[in-house]
Image (cartoon, rainbow, N blue to C red; front, side):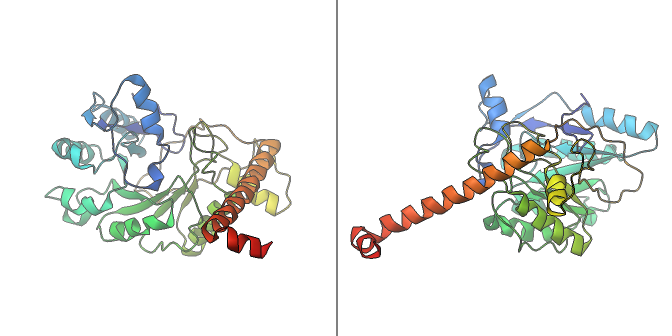
Length: 308
């Protein structure tokens, strides 16, 4: 099936599903929440019956002399060790479908080098294999370093879920950056501040790196897709029409023009945007209060009485 609810790609392809947690960004995993209620044991990887999807997408793009973007393993991790037995077949699919750019996103970039096909040749034989890693917190910066060591056509970052400011992230060697907030039941606890997204966009502007804003934090995916656009308009004191304000979605240069994208998500109204901003401020205040309580507990009653 080619259709996808992801409005920043033309399709998603899951040659296998299932994964295991490795870092803070795995908290509230949408894929786990999606598959576990269906009776799947998410920590057990299993192949799927979707291996024709890339060929269908490739035929569609080739017929109009265009290229497409396919997000791979949205319900897994392309470089998970438990998928080693199937990955060689996936590499063949990628090599066959030259009109499709495959987004190979992983939280395990340290495994990439050992999992490349024998004919990789610095990625020259796989120009449509885009290598990416997740980095939504500062403790994951090491992943960006690991990704930088991989010779390939394009390296990209998924700064999603963005859970804290990463304003000092090193983007050298990165060719595309996408930012988004957490979706799912825990999103309110880990709400992305739009200021953090703006910080990353500012870095990309300086380095001339294409930047894409995916979504604001919400119970559902693809909500508040104009959140950063309204944030920019608000700071510039512009009352832009939320339904018409351009989404901030830039893409890397490709050999052929990309197929058009379909906007699937929902936009904030100004009221929803302001409610989101207030919720972020309330969260900041709550976090500050929790930190103060923690300091008082750690200091003990004697020190607390002294401050009083």
